[in-house]
Image (spheres, rainbow, N blue to C red):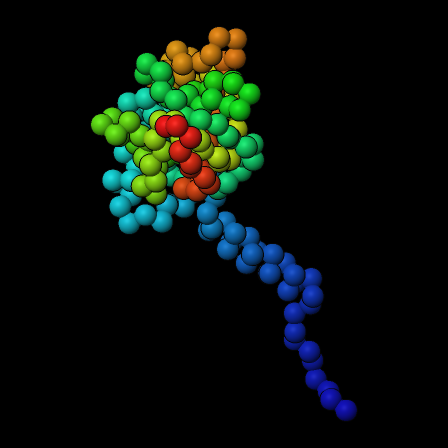
Length: 178
C-alpha cells in the first residue's frame, strides 16, 4: 500500500495551462494581415515601385496566398496605352497583373516575375477574378483606377485581375498567325 499525499495537478489545471501556452504560440505567429515575403533572392529588383509600368497595371508586393478561383482566359492585345484581355466571347477587359510584372516596351511584351514573357497576341490562361473600376481605387489606388477606367470597353466597366501569386499565369501560348 502506498501512503502519502499526491501533489499532482488536476486535469483542469493542465488544460488551462495548455490553453495559455497554445495561445502564446499562436499569438507570436504570423497575423492575418501579414504575408511572407516572396522566395526571390532579388526582391528589390523583382518588385519595382508603383503599380503601373507603361501599360501594365500590377498588384503590390508581397505575393498573397492564392484565393481567387475565376478562370482568366483570353488573348492579350495592346490598344493605345491599354493592355486588354480579349475573352473567347469577344469581351475586352483591362488586366491587372501580379506583383513584379514589368513592361518591355521594345519587345512589346509583359514580363512576369518568373521572367516568362507574354507577347502581344499571346493567349493566356490563369486564375484570378473580375472587379469593377471603382473597386480598384481602394485596392490599387487612383492611378491604376484612372488607367483602368480609360481602358474599359463601353458598358462593361470590369477589369480582369490575375491572382497576386508568382504562378497566377499557368499557360502562355502564341496565337496562330501572330
